[in-house]
Image (tube, rainbow, N blue to C red; front, side, top):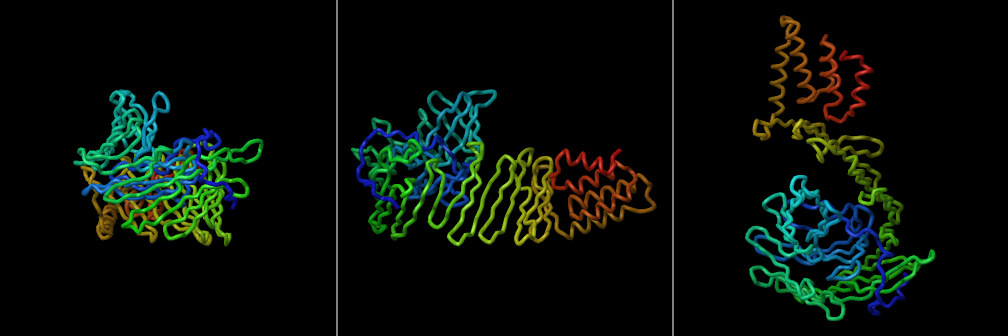
Length: 494
């Protein structure tokens, strides 16, 4: 690695950051609608769902007694704007969080845990905003007040786009700012809960004090790599977090983040933890991961700039892992080291939107269903089959409360339905009872073959086709075109 650049040469050169990413705000995971904030997570640690470097660390947690607020730091290659607290390539979301208007009707919010939500105006009241992850907001002059979708979550007030207050239960936290509108601390009822000290030269945070502990931050220069005339060149250095010194009661240990470039003039980062263990990360000028320790990455981005990328990584033993979450089509594919492939599908529309349809595992060319669920017209789960084939049925009363049936109760119901089928029945009654039994086998047992066999005993072609169709579409997975094809092939229902 070429580490010839002296990162101590910090100076303001007015270096352009346009050679980095054009993506300003990219969410790491779907924001939590309820409860506490927490550290973002990715399928592959250190890589965002779109393939960018995204390394998160929880420095501490602000203890409020019956509530807590995590103090998070993130190193990200998709942030074109330096953090006002930690400098280039970083985010301290508690203080860098904000809400900005993207166009006339949409807004983007970064929360205090670094996640993102997208808001759109209400059709009837333009001062009401609806978030993509369950948040709601209201515009009051220059303030935007954001509410979680449940009472246990945090309420946030953004003033002129910047986070001003957070409240939860009996707690109300106020972000204190200096004359330049830079955060300098957090108070609760006038009592200091957290204090920031800023470096006079860079304006960045040099110390953070909370819970009786003091963290120190030191900065060096982060190379700004540009491609000029087909060559990668260092256009200058920007101040960036280089070292964290932990409180004395934690041993006063240090953790360092050394930004530089490789021999091929690609950006890299060497992280040395408090125990001296090193981690080397390399990425391209587009910000996407190339190397993380022993893992080499191949990122295949989506044509849609906001969609997930297909991520494949290979270790030094040539073993591969893979992940791709296709949100629009409701399918997630994962491949682990031994080649086992797992496909998880979910509904993308209707009352069951977002709910699991099926989880299938393929190992050594053997396909196994791990989970399969069916839902009613209200989106309530009615049946779940586990990896052993065991079926759990769900029924609901008029209040929508779940009612459970044991296997013994199902067998008793089966015997009752069978007893209604008799040669003494009138033809219409007999067919109706057979139809009811077939539907019971499809939707409650389930024993699909028994239902199909029963369909042969029904003369009414429409009922016969209904049994036939639902025996294949019991999980509501068939498209309309497939249903039409079945109708045409069978000749039933006419």
